Amino acid sequence: MQHQRVLSGMRPTGRLHLGHYHGVLKNWVQMQHEYECFFAAVDWHALTTHYEDPSEIQQHVWDTVIDWLAAGINPGSATIFIQSRVPEHAELHLLLSMLTPLGWLERVPTYKEQQEKLKEKDLSTYGFLGYPLLQAADILVYKASQVPVGADQVPHVEMTREIARRFNHLYGREVGFEDRVAQALKKMGKKNAKLYSSLRKKFQEEGDESALDTARALVENQGNISLNDRDRLYGWLDGSGKVILPEPQALLTPVSKMPGLDGNKMSKSYGNAIEMREEPASVEKKIRTMQTDPARVRRTDPGEPEKCPVWGLHQIYSPDEVKDWVQKGCRSAGIGCLDCKQPVIDAVTRETGTFRERAREFEESPELVRNIVAEGCEKARDVARETMDDVRGAMGLSYR
Ligand code: TRP
Ligand code: SF4
Image 1 (cartoon, protein in one colour):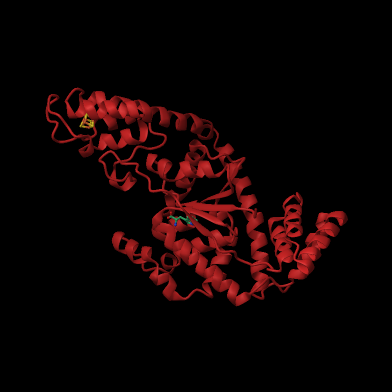
Image 2 (cartoon, protein in one colour; image 1 turned 180 degrees about the horizontal axis):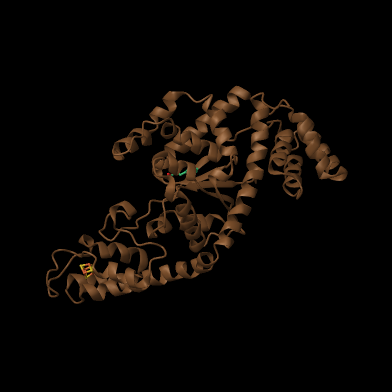
């Protein structure tokens, strides 16, 4: 099995809400156990639309990171970092811009859509047009194999693949590949290197597939060689060489059914959100005052859950027995709307309680968050630097 690396990013827009948790973060938390994960607060992307008012970015970044930690992202398993602290993203963005046809950027559906949607802002900027290319750089600088995103972002990953293909086509295989292989072999130690070479020979000269498998396993088990060297050794085995920028796959995040307080998709801009770290009293108040089926004017009027936003929350939070109780009780007017809301209030406050609990130590000691991020940025930079060495070499820029 080849190494699988995940990269995803989120624009820091302030405190996250339950829609972010159920739509994105829950999925990230799951993935951190299955892949090597890098999660970025993409502050430069935030600037593409908020360049006029950068004063809040800093606070938004810390709030975002605390909410990731509150959701259960574990800095021991996943690398949490800030985009602008890894300047290699900017360098790759610049270099990729040399080979990116304008038409590719203009054709990305979000470009015109967002300009229409955010009419009050002047988004006829160079930075905004380049948004998906910056995203491509985010992904490619880590040679990520998987990119978890919502459906709206799939065209961006698709363009990233096209950019990678174009780059590899133009600049081909790695320069000095054979020398680098030799150096990687040295790092394996004499005995392993010898075994590797004889297995490679067996495969390449006699077509012995099992020798190939054994050699791959040998490479896989080397503790002290980098991921790049590992890829080189795989490529040397089967003769494929080393692709400089591998094409990533979009990992489609299932559409979140998390409704807001009014039944529409939960979103800060609709004013229908519950924050992950919302106070219990405020959660209770928001749910108690939620609109219900308008047909239930009096307690004795029967209602229809399908026409009620509270039902949407039951579908996320309630077990089958409770859902049964709601359906029967609502349609027969056997329960009142406040009765119906109580289990949702309980479940949401339990969930936000967990987040608040986990967030507390980070709120109390910002130093802790700074350290986690500093460490993440370092780890991210190490990988990004290696990629840039390859990229500069391929583009003829490694002279000294
Ligand atoms: N454009 C993404 C969004 O709005 C955020 C993002 C930036 C991203 N860079 C990324 C997502 C890299 C995945 C991978 O949601
Ligand atoms: Fe909505 Fe529940 Fe009231 Fe029915 S009983 S209208 S589902 S809140």
